[in-house]
Length: 531
Image 1 (cartoon, rainbow, N blue to C red):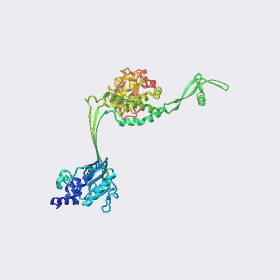
Image 2: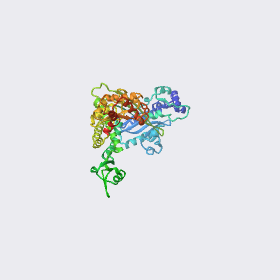
Image 3: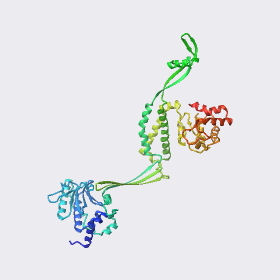
Image 4: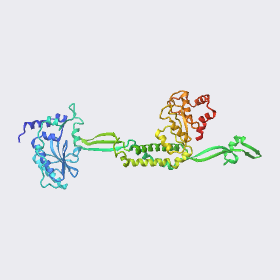
């Protein structure tokens, strides 16, 4: 058949190296630009492969790929400007005495079909189809009784380069300056890759995040170990006791008596009779720094988990997340590439019926329930109970308002706010409302006045004293005390520069007519009562 002027022009375009470098041609485009003989060979080869039962095909940017049982078994693609049949067997197995198969296993896009057979002539086509029939036999593929022709030369109608470019079957490579670039054929490689698209929708509670759940779960074994084997030390105290209450006399007791002869009531020869003796009392104690830290950690951990558990029970699901995830893994020469695109849409659920409580059947919610039970068990453990009996009190000065009231729902011991002022005078979240102060007062706890100017609401002595008087007006004579915060702030109120200035506040209150007993309670007795 004579070659037309149209085919000659297209052949020129295919063989132009400058044009090929600037554009990526799809397999369909190359077929449409090819001569009629190439189209006939492609249709014959494709129909021969599809004449076997179970063989499926997919036309991609770089070729036609054939699969059976989910595995790639053959492909039709252009290699070095020639139409080729690629088979899923070794090049040696696909070679014959006249026609040799080329091994292209080193090329990533052909690694599943490494035996390449160019279809440059009728003889080459017949040989390639014979090799395909041999491969089909080894794969136990059966030829159909009456196979239908799926492809024909007309499946690839001739078209011009410019038209194919407009249709998107030819794409610019983005190449410039006329030199080979790393991404000249990225688009074609991307089309030949393995792409997946995943659509998903989930309903969430914003207070719950698997990240913090997982981190707390990871910490539980270490916390359990510390609770089972808390550190101990021998606490030693010294007391001067009358002889009748003295437990044990040691060398240190005798040495102390020699230094305090006024404790000797009589001496008769070598016999010395003391009236009092130094007693060295040693007791096993768990009040180590590590245990105090663990006790505080357990309290904060319980507040953290229980607060989110409470919010979940009250609110249920409050957010819907819809997402689309696209991934494509492909090869460009020897380089492996991965493209991932994530699109996520979040919307608040406000009026969905039947959805609010749907979260409670999830695995994450069961984990949160378990954490809530575990942290509650920690708070009720013998360790925490013993620490409380030894005078380790919960300090609410850094707690949020919900955490503050959570604490009061579970504790029966005095509560302290070591450095907090009146929120009614300075509306800072670290200060206490009147109801909070009354709650602490009713437990027999203590509230320490904070000297930090930002929590006082100013830097004058009058403003500082106003917080004391506010708490006193709430029947806080046995509750209000000094708190300080001397080491955690930048500017102190009332001209304070350190602990050496506490006497200024004492003098100012004394000048206001505060009775001596009230001053002693504020400056000493209220703290000493619980410590």
